[in-house]
Length: 458
Image 1 (cartoon, rainbow, N blue to C red):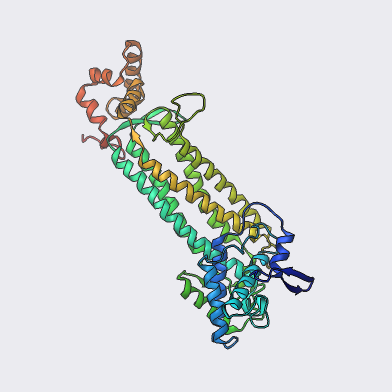
Image 2: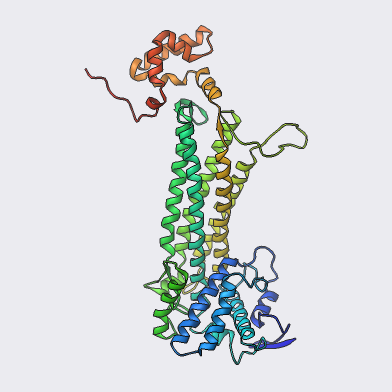
């Protein structure tokens, strides 16, 4: 065992433990279940530590040997080669200080091992005075969070693009199938099934654009601002160099905020990103509900994936759509936590950033899962042309198509005649009254989906 000491006393640790006294106290203080701190966030913090020690080495604060060992240890964490030491709960007080200190300690002790020194030999490499030099949790944590969000939003955007493509494929596949358009779940006017899927594709395309644009809001970071954004205790050369080093090493398009006090104190940028994610969640719920309805009336068929009942043989449920709806609902609700946390920040810091970070990263993960499973599901959807046409012509809703030809009053008369005739197929009735050529012309899919109609010359 080894003994470590801080302002509050001593703590006994296993001699090979990479974490130190600050992490041990946090584990004792926060015996909380639920999610752990995001691995991607830990990796991003390690990348910041690596950039910082290299800049500090360039400025003459550390020897090349120490810089090399600390940078190597940070790289191991960034590459997820050290994961067992990071078990802190996501919900912690102190604006993320416990997480920052845990990374500092693990890097320091791993660097000591690399140099052949025992863990805890902080006279050589210290978690705070070496690994955390010229930094604060208040500029490290939010910078790492923004880096993580950028990466995850980019990945989500690519998955959304795949879903958009799946809907566009069905748009083409179903372009010649005439079906019922509905308003308030009542029969309205004819449309093509392809245009129905086109509307899904357009909504998802906007989600992709929102994801792309939301990245702009989190590209400016406050690294170098230290405690409250004034850069107190950090050399000016470090402040200007560390962001350049971080951008160069990560390849992320990040830059130092013009006003780092603002970037440290205010979290509205996360709310903006979360709002874009919420729009995606709303679209996924709406689309999944629409697909469930179209499947229930048998106008489309969803792939059969598993038994739907333990008592009703042969029953199959739309399980993927129900899962998507639940994932999207959870993601939508996470946005409430993001906005609440942003609002509760006080003066020069947002002390609720750990919860905010967990909520927005969870929101992205939930939507990523929802989009992924929906994409493969949409690929397997088929449309039932016969049932679509039967439903369309079992009622009189398609009469609206012929208004430019016959007018409103004549249309009402034809509806009355049809209802009194005892016939069951409205198309056949219209062909016998208006003529086959007129009916065929007006019910052509291309003409149905044309924007308006061309006036006849007089």
